[in-house]
Image (tube, rainbow, N blue to C red; front, side, top):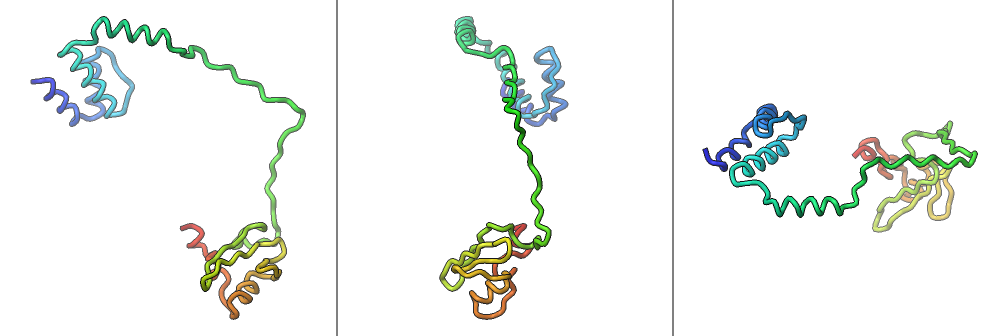
Length: 164
């Protein structure tokens, strides 16, 4: 069987079979489970055995390059955290009467409507559009359209739109 046939045959082997082949070819077991890596490593070894390994000159050059490389041989020591005496604290902010279907205060809702881009700011106690404050999103939507509309659909705040 030629080397090309052996390498082609590697593609059809399972990971377990490749691990067994690795043991046979290298004389030691591997804990590698990546099929492509195992196949490439075995193919390289088979070619090296058949066609010859690296020349002595190439080995010496590789050693020179490795010696010149600035390789870290120890793990860097962890730097201690600065001790200023203060610690950062985080806490959840709760809005007691906040409707969970609406964005948090400070959010700007944007919507294209009749060729204009509308921007409605969510306030802690209402909504602002075009410099005017409104007590509800429904009131803002009515001022924009001139008729009553479902504010959640108009501003695309439905659950389906939020998750999509």
